[in-house]
Image (cartoon, rainbow, N blue to C red; front, side, top):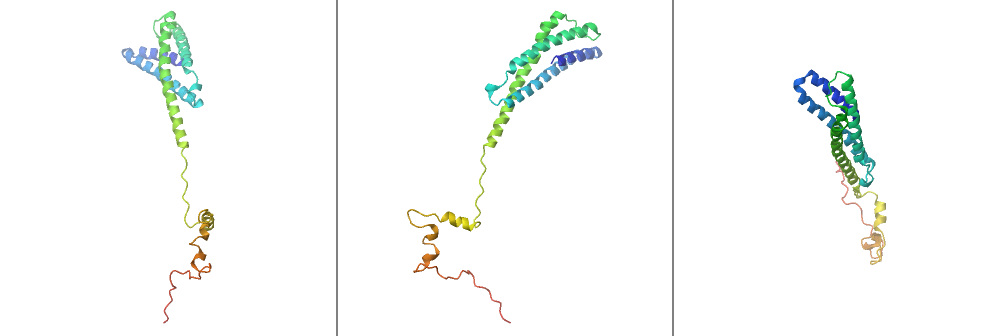
Length: 203
């Protein structure tokens, strides 16, 4: 973040020297750049931390991390910018070193810390939402395929031939068995053909 702020201030100083009538617009563009970098960087930090620690109690304290980053960026970028403005012809403002290390550093800290905290919260929310969505999809039980009728007749016969405690016989020994149709308990020699065979007429 120190590098981002120093480069932005140097580019801004060169651009204002080239287009002095567009100074206000260029300053807003520079402000948007440093804020956007903080948003993207902190957002990625929030997503990575939430994925590494699914439980919110185990998440890393990114608040202190980005607060320290903002403080370091404010102090270093202020000192480096003052030094560049002193030893070169690039106009980085006429601020003193004391101003750069106090008020200027505090303003830089806010430009880093405030967008970073917003981005961390959004990144963690996105990561936790994706995790809950994946968990809900993984909990769905697959629907069992229906058993095809007529396939595996032997297995079906064994499944339905269990002994019934009340009736005293299984399905294969019940009133619908083969031996129930004749008085002597033997199966009838009934023809198994449903339709008679069609005979070809003789010429």
